[in-house]
Length: 289
Figure (tube, rainbow, N blue to C red):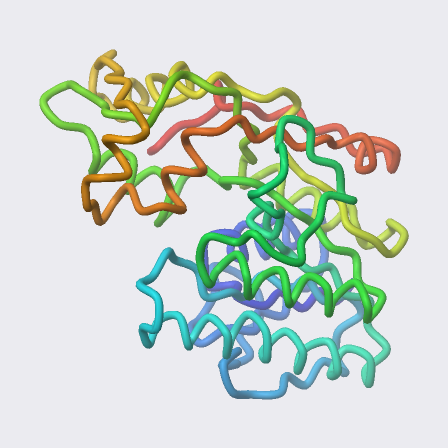
């Protein structure tokens, strides 16, 4: 199969392109810079219309990520890439007759509701804490309306992760890892699991699917395991009361980051399991090098 992978030069897109190559597909890598494998097709998601007529399947990973200051240029770029770029891609895929698998995010879910067991019916129309969640939610709804398969991972981790783990490591000080509030339960997604799901989803019915590791993790134990994997020693977790965290300015623990770490967020994957998808990779398999 000829598989178009957008954002193939990025973290998730690169894994998807390699997974497609490994199963014998031809990877068509739509990105600004060359991906790790496959044929590079230059594409700027913020401005260009992709030509998808040579593809049979489109896996849309390209996104502008980050937790940026309100009103910043980076936030405006998120709207250009995540919303308008996705709309252009969906229109191009419709003209080419390609099925689309869209990599969305659990950040689309309304944070004002309980997230102790999130199904795909959880509201996505509001309650976002930054522009990333809001713009991905708009793109998510557009993809569903266009008949795409939408995957919603949470906190994707793995070798080469440029966002999650580096920010976590930067927060450690002298063996102490300050975390907001008490220990909670969190769903995480191995990048290899997401890549497998992207390819498997080509055969799934239109709709949204949560994609996370087989079981959720206790936050503190997960953080300590990452520190050990990076040679930081066992370390020690310092539970900082939420009122104190919220009162202190921090470039690392933004309101969005605090929310993601301080509240139980568990995604129900019954819908994906119903399609025969059974991820096996866990945080115990994580190796930073």
